[in-house]
Amino acid sequence: MAYQSSINKTVLPNGVRIISERVPYVDSVSVGVWAVAGARDEDETSRGMSHFVEHMLFKGTQKRSARQIADEIDSLGGHLNAFTDKEYTCFYAKVLSEHLNDALDIVSDMVLNSVYEPAEISREINVVLEEIKRHQDTPEDEVHDLLAQTLWKGHHLGNPVVGSEAVISALNREALLSYVNEFYRPDALVIVAAGKIDHRSFVDTVALHFGSLEGKRTPRRAVDVIPNRDFRIIDKPTEQVHFCLGAVGFSQHNKKKYALAAIDSILGGGMSSRLFQEIRENRGLAYAIGSYSASYNEAGLFAVYGGTSVDNVRDVVELTRRECAAIGRNSVTEAELDRAKNQIRGALVLGQESMSNRMSRLAKGELYFGRSVRLDEVIASIMSISRDDVADVASAVFGDSRLAVAAIGPFTKHADVLEGVFS
View 1 (tube, one colour):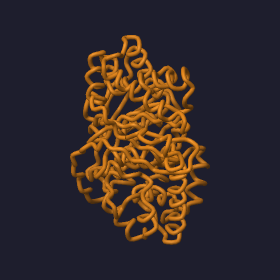
View 2: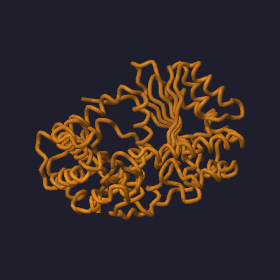
View 3: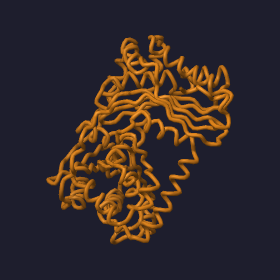
């Protein structure tokens, strides 16, 4: 089965990359401005800066107030949003195809002409500090950051996207402008659209907005990732213990990531997964149990997350370790592997129905590989996975019985029950 469409790429003289995918049978378009700027680029003095800049770009430009930005996108019947990740920040809009130029005018104005008004910065500092506190009050979210900080101790990939209270509290206009001038350079911007779109017209519009932008971003310096298989525990008066068991995964550039995706599906990727069936369905020990993998330029990770009561956590952790070890001993059946392949393939193909998903796939292909990675190429890699591939990868991931551990719960109050559970 072919999953081809019309994908085109143009690079402006100043280095801005423009990519579009024409999908003629829809009447919408998703357009995004992606910047090579994320938590990975921050140090102790700038932790959270990428995320804060994302917030500030909605607070007004030289010709639009924050209210006007919201009013204009609503008047188009569209949707405007943004997100920050470890290695990039994205600002995107979803609109009817007839409104593409208007949407791009709004998004480009935000990226290029935001004013960073001091009073707005002060207000947004309070907003982000509240976001940090909310994150800290949500252990099922915080524990994932804790795992990354533990497994990638000393590496910038361990930086939390939301940042630190100390850095955010001290932010000012000069620091923000300096950050934007350093990272939002033309060669670090990728403008992507998917939907009912004409590439040539899209290039002309992008060039009108971004063509005069100058300068170059300092290239990222690759840093070796040395995994830290340790455990880190935060004592909080929660009702449950929330934990992550983490192992070293694979970077975006390692094809073993496909076999790890199959392992993720088999071990904890859905209702039919081993962890869900054994821990939740068969034993009723937890409501939340599952796994996930993440891949970046320099490294990747694999993690199992669970949340359960103090009385059950020892059993849940032991069962989780047992299932991880079993997969490492080549216990995956052909039926399980076939189901995992079809689950992944189905998710990929169904995702093609979303123009935002198509837009994101294009952007990430460019950011990580400098090209559009065709869907049929990915599916072919998934469908070619063998049991031997799974066994080799599982052995590499789970071969060291010591997994990195992050946990949040009432450890002091229940020291007698929780002693030695994670060590």
